[in-house]
Image (cartoon, rainbow, N blue to C red; front, side, top):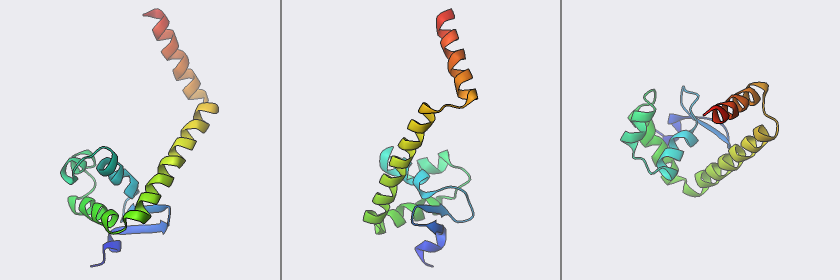
Length: 107
């Protein structure tokens, strides 16, 4: 069985665990940045099999340069999206921030 058979590869910036909406970045973020092992990740994402988690880690280790670039792009994109949301918050976010500020004033 090919390692790629564990994934749905929609584009070079969108690789998901087969049959799920979970991107490999979700698993690899925990593995690379939070230094969690496969079992710990499995406890966080119970809908993903341990085999899928190990396959994702192995895929990363076999394609380290390519997947490292994938992760860097994903992190940059996430940061840009967060900045855009901060600049243009939704009505609900504004309401929540106002409630938070009112709670601080009351306390």
